[in-house]
Length: 186
Image 1 (cartoon, rainbow, N blue to C red):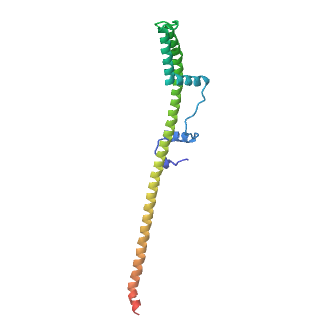
Image 2: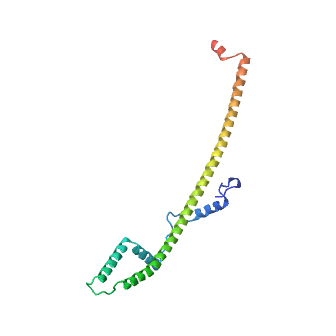
Image 3: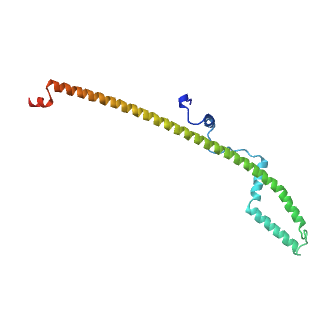
């Protein structure tokens, strides 16, 4: 679509070029999907498991059992108070799960940025399309107003001519002495 210089849209050139680029892209209603690597899928699974109430409940149960078995004398104490082995196991778990969760969050943040960019482009395209539609409606309104004014002027000119013809014929009829009333009485 090439516009004449007097028909340029009301949006600026940068927005117009952006709209042309967005129109040329493959239309998509969903965000672009990225193929995940094994490490990314694994980090997402670990983050989903560690961040669940099921994991917290199971881990809390294991900790309570560990402490109770080591405090009571029912079984030989393999990790007596202050539970150094338990602290080592929890530190080991935290040392590995924290970076894995961070990898998952970083990847999710990148996906969120891509989705936000995609949404921004869709919204920008819609906004620019609406601006162009408003511009077209304004032009159509101006065109129809001009056409209406032209038609009104033509109608007025035709009415003036018709009145002149009627007046001319009425003048001829009155000068000749004939009228419709005289014709009826004969």
